[in-house]
Length: 539
Image (cartoon, rainbow, N blue to C red; front, top):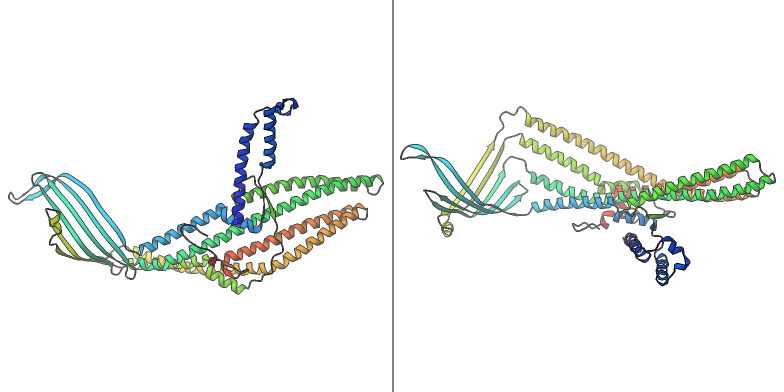
């Protein structure tokens, strides 16, 4: 992390100094081009301004382009710290974290205040007059206010809810029959429960912890995926750099050989056809250099964009050396993947959610019955204080039943759909598990083979460089023809590409194994042990 913060801060400081330097130029040099170039115009003020200009150029060189050197580990550290993909990964984790916190909070008692602060009614209502034995219409005005404070606690085992509440109501009637009333419930204890219905709390206790564990594993998984992407961009730049260096060296070499060929033609040491071939090599080398320059800029721009650096940052990639000898047992990799890979956790979550849907539709296809019971006290009075004096005991028990008589098979159809969907999810989960296991096995096998390929590619590159240098010297002294020289150069370029590709494949497989297993086989530790998860941040 220190490395990536240093790189990031260096780019920011250089950008700031660049702006300061531009502002300094505008103040210190309000003179035109002719004045600067004229030796007779250097007065005292102009001389001081020019001196400051030289000091500024000496103090702040190369503002047009930021230059940094990165090796593979620095690139990965910077990607996991500053890239947009890393930012998205952290926020995805935090979203899952707060979802789990919400689940935990729902297991705790909740305190709720329900209020109707003011309700005014003015209307005409129909009432029965017993004296006249008929219904009459009367106008009425009333004011009403109400408040309820309740504590609720969900009971996961049965799916019911305990509640303890208190409430107060106030009503005043205006008009011919004026009166004021206070109604109070000092305390009431109750319990509500679905008797034969679906219990969502029981399923939440199974699914939500698994979902949060998957979110934590996904964060590490995505971090390793960022490392894998950074490795791809890094080696793309390294390959472009190598192609550019070879093209530049080839351009110089072909130009030199062409000049030597011109001298040898004068003494009839080579034919004119060979000289034209050398000149064609010069033209081709220049074209190749231009293409390599464009490819290098594109690769540099892609890596800078991925690392969230300034787009004009010039990056030099330093290739890693020969990797350490490491053989990963396939069975250990499979065991680690089955425990740590978030895709396995996601498949288990899918099965549980499908089973939850089956349970829900099955119980909803039957009749529904629920019970609500409470015991407490209540009172009514014309004055507030009297509403809490000598309260009367209040008891309430209610049972509600809902029986579907005719629904034309809707509930049964939903239940059958849920069962079939569960079978599909189980089958798909097993297929996905097999695919993941196959990917782990093949990646580990490729990795174990790749170490030997890196060693062979490095040896081939050394031999190709020696062979080209030897052929070039023999051509200069006239003991090798142009075809041998061209063939030797092509072999050197191919060996260079093969070496970088072998390194790239090694490190890509290495980080892919880390991603699939969330295990660092080089150190022998699980990657989840190195991370601290919290709402304030992810380390």
